[in-house]
Image (tube, rainbow, N blue to C red; front, side):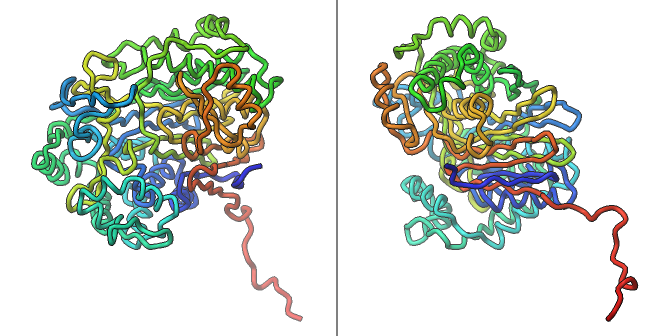
Length: 551
């Protein structure tokens, strides 16, 4: 059983984790814009209505497939400021293994936690290069909702509560989200006037307003005053990177997604390569045998991710080996079908689960799958004075210990698990999908692909199906996994635990052969698909009042 319903149409599809943002994307499509216009309008709107997850001061990855079949990755991930280095932060000796916690939480909260932002530049470049509408038009829905206000959802209310202790430390963010020292109530109206003014200025002046202009001057001065590390040189020197995607195959389908420093698609292909040697369909969805295999391939992928995946400008990543079928065959041969194993995995650095994802397509054949974030819930958990902007806390993703693949180095891009994936068959798109969820992103995408390809699920069933996750220690199982399976996995040697959710709200589009798009969002977030199922009148049709006969 699914909890939400899919949307279908032939003229376009916009899916995000908030209905107002999905509507903004659909508005661009209805006005004649393309998928890129819709995606950018959706993201700007998400910075208003889903402010705990994404903002213009964040970073991310965009995967764009044009109607001509070409794929482009825009890497607008955040980078470490020039003033930072391997010993900028002091690791907390009391921190749990695999966490990035530091003394004083300097890499998690406040100006010292902020990495150089890439979102605004990346979004504007995507729109300028591939879009058709003006920046002002793409930003209009976001400005409208920021200045007029919108209703707080129960999800936003809960997120404010989760971050309230840190948010209380900053008067500006507390004033907005913690009136009377309590989280905004679900159903109340939130108006963000300062942010609306900032968006209006960006719509008029473009991204240079932040990177080389007056907003950047203000931001750098704030950083200097507050003890942060970002300078004007960091802002003026920031550049996005256009990357070639990684590609792999699974049972006749091609899996395409961003390369490192995004680790997700690389290891999705690796895991599917291993699973390809098993008859997953015959084993069945959610059975002990299937979940056991999923757990083992997850542990294998995390062992390789910890050892080898980081910013390729700083670390050599053996992409060819990890993607190869022969390497998968070697790993597959070592799996014990009856017993859980350890795979010499270091614990991978924890990345934030608080991210957002957009999946958009138009009738012409353009598709966008894009994952963007400010890292933790409400990022660095403060507002840049007078601007309404919530900065990222991406420095928490870097390893505070020197000498490791993901240690802090000036200019290094953060490593992420983002997996905005597009799947094709015979050169034509079949699926586009992605989700937020930190280290649980790429395992969740892999499972959704297996649900679709191996188990023949509908796209709604695939995004909502129960998930599992492990990186080598506890095996997390969502509640939809049967208790008998839980017990059988424990008997195989897995440290099984129940969790409420594995990763966040997934969105996906299924492109049917007749041109119909079927869009789905899952129960784990406020996700909403909006489809354009109508269109213009049949050519040549017009109303002729003189043809009406009066009786």
